[in-house]
Length: 107
Image (tube, rainbow, N blue to C red; front, side, top):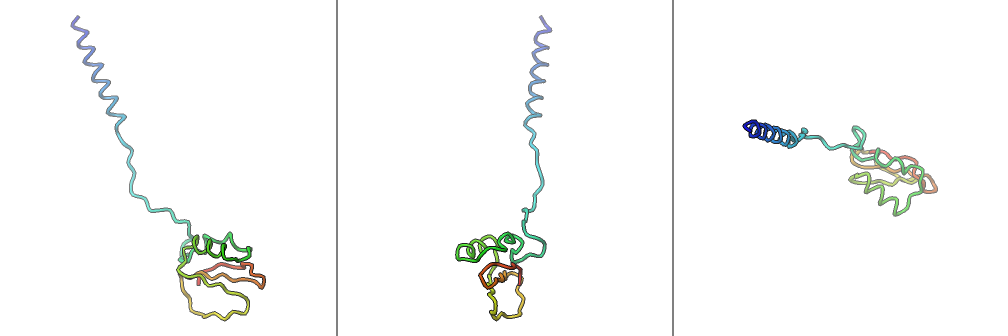
């Protein structure tokens, strides 16, 4: 009958060691947030290229502004005079005569 307490002690030790291995946590390092923008894309033009070819309207303009995160958006219609200064966080939307978006680029 002396074997029974020894077996109980071994069984208890195995149970405790099994529980402790389950409690180990998997830890990771700190990660940088994933950016959906292309490298060097300060105005967010790479995020809104899917809007090229669509007719600009108030709703679409709001959506482009929201998705791009650009500080300012310049809507360039044919014949519109624009300054030649370059601003990395400004999105230029060039439109055709019908108001369809031709290009979206920083500047």
